[in-house]
Length: 255
Length: 213
Image (cartoon, rainbow over the protein chains, first blue to last red):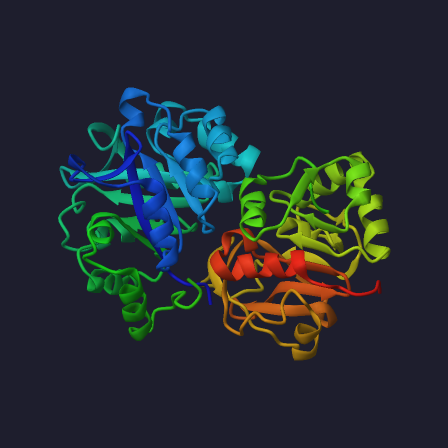
């Protein structure tokens, strides 16, 4: 059977991988190529490579770093950050990305997802949503989670899937960086409206959080995290083994 | 010379990088003369079957590839390129493929277990139902049972049992790879399947496929 995916996220600023707590207080971790190769070798199923500052200041993705990653890492690679136009899609796909993740760009241009899906196929278009509870409602944020759009996040995702998004990344701002577990309530709400693969992001603190995620919500296809992987709090081979022991289908041999 | 057929469908960066990583010197070309001179051919492809088949026909590449395959040149189709090897596809209407392998490409909708999402996107294990066919293939003979590879697809090749070398489990067995003499195809993406995928590509690049069928 198709396996649950474990995805380290490489947030990039100035060509270096960083990870903040609640999207602030960035810390330098390592070079994208070194981390990407390390993760591929230890069994990561996929990598997400985000330019986290691109949405707010218009910085171009560091396509040279992406090219270097894609020429030595042979697992699926998703690229996001500052994707606003079809030209942005084209630029990162030509540098080796397999999927392109849109966030703020899909909010400012409602045609971006349908046009990208038409040109590159839905399997290539990932809708990444930063979501936070505001007055008890799941609300969509943009610009790296800094700006409240006032948009209902669940409706936004439903609309995105209808428009051609082939995968959804749910970033819970409420649980991000806290390490208290994934946002099960938010993910359940999303899985009720999205029949495409769903990637859970924000909140993983320990191996049990992944087990709880996949056992509680079989409709979630992947778990994404950064800090806990970058700082070695969870080693991916250990995580895979624990998931397998818990009866969750994972890829654990060919790394 | 190994030629990766460039017919304007999909992104060849990863495929070319992975071929380089296994030491193969591949030429990416849509030029009929280059393809005709190749001693091995890879037919890649991502997207919709109908568009891809039309693009292949535009320059007569379809006839050329059929001719080379029939002359015994090893040919590997990847993903949509694998589906193109078949006689027909029912993706958005009925489209003619290369017809190098009998069978047809149909939707997984209503075929696979209902709780599974379409497209199948992710890693699934290879199972080899036909030991004799596996052993006969330089590409698959050393790939272990249960090896994981990466899939992204909504359609699959059916009615081709005799040529199925590998399947994956989607509640029912779904065609993952086919071999018919010097013609073979992978539904999954070897260029995205880590070391197992690189091994498959290396096997194709270095394999001795003997005489033509």
